[in-house]
Amino acid sequence: MTEEIIIIGAGPAGLSAAIYAAREDFHPVIISGFLTGGQLLLTSKVENYPAFPEGIEGPDLMQLMKRQAERFGARFVYEEATEVDLDSKPFRVVTSSGNFESRVLIIATGASPQWLGIDSEKKFIGKGVSACATCDAPFFKEKKVMVVGGGDTAMEDSLFLTKFADRVTIIHRRDRFRASRILQNKVLKNEKIDIIWNSEIDEILGKNTVNAVTIRDVNTGQKKELPSGGVFIAIGHRPNTAFLHGKLPLDEKGYVKTIDEVKTHIDGLYIAGDVADGVYRQAVTAAASGVKAALEARTYLQKIRIG
Ligand code: NAP
Image: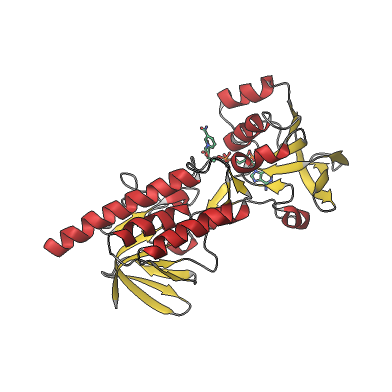
């Protein structure tokens, strides 16, 4: 059976596309992976999504979006898309249970934060370790926190964290930042921020939550333990595009290169959310691009029906 619209991914972009597509009676099928919700499943409270003045837990926000899509007839398939055929019409999507076909395909597979990859980091994600300062900074009021990284995100996260934390220490593996000059200057001038150069975090320590880190000087190998109430990892994101290599143009970091926002060079194929956005990466911006993709899908489907 050929579906009208298949959406791969069920974060804010995929779910917002699903709400619009379902409400227009396109009966979209969402290949959602094993969990619905994307990166918001990793955060606790979301305080910057419009219409929730008291904030809302990330997973709850995603459940609400999912219910809204289901109310209009969206259907969820809890499997990973392992392969897509973008050369055929209808498009073909392969999952572990079989093949799906659709006239429109919206790819909204998002991005995943890069982690340091040390065991103690995994143990404390959501318990003092975060990859999203915009989401979690207010939970670190009056604490001493660390930020790892030397790019624009690390600078912005550190500056934002100074509004809440008592002290922010940037741990950077080199002796200079790669961030833009303007952000670097703001950081260097901020009295609440100090910087430890040429260092990496070796271990994150604590019982139930983080209370210290061990850092290592990359030149001397010398280690020292520093008290810390939280660790923000700001070392970049990795778009979830492994299954698109060789099928769509990707930039040097792996993000999909779109033409004109959500459009691609292939009619009927749209891209939404963080999978094509290495800069804004907010739930609300992802949701907006999901809506744009659904509206483009509607125009395309109307055109091929008439055509
Ligand atoms: P990024 O520019 O790739 O910087 C990542 C930083 O993390 C680098 O300093 C890198 O160190 C460090 N790093 C990478 N892997 C590491 C590891 N395993 N251990 C320790 N450190 C590690 O990423 P980003 O800062 O997230 O920025 C992504 C893009 O968004 C950039 O194009 C940026 O300009 C843009 N952005 C713009 C704004 C803005 O304009 N306001 C704000 C945020 C982001 P090295 O320097 O040694 O490689």
